[in-house]
Image (cartoon, rainbow, N blue to C red; front, side, top):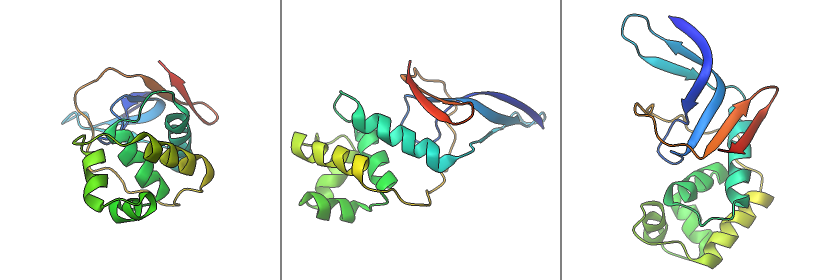
Length: 148
């Protein structure tokens, strides 16, 4: 096992534009499989959520899903909070229907004012192909998000 500090795409499908910088990478010298050590995961999710909620662009379907999970809401919880059906939430998150401006403002405001969940699901997969990155989450003494 080879270990180094480096950069790696954020794990999961929701935020393909996030690059983690300064994380511990472990690579198997036999098969080449790589694992990523992400310290202070709750803090990383918080700075990402705050950055997304404060961004001037419309939310992507992945960002909507990430923010919902950050809040600890199920699809049904989101539907109840927004006064829509669970199918509508699913359409927002699968890019089948854009989220309305009022619902988007409510989601952003909720993220900025409500405490998040304490535990997060671990993503199942690592992204194998590099992608263009628009955000960098850097770890020095703490996590910080920069626009690339």
